[in-house]
Image (cartoon, rainbow, N blue to C red; front, side):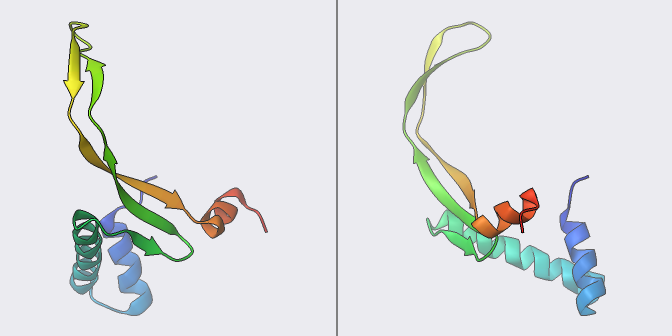
Length: 95
């Protein structure tokens, strides 16, 4: 099973009492804030959950899988996630 934005909005709606439409706006606003922060190179730390960071991947050599021809892969940015110790313990069922 996958947790979706709609699922999150439904839980917010039922637990907080917001309308479903308002809950969707809250969820969208949260994700926009996270995306904007990452785009600006800022880390996003959610205590007890984990930390999202942007890392720079340097240019590297690769190959075209269809032809086997060597190519150069350009540098790029990636988003990484480092989970917190609390989340790790919770997922593993540790006390």
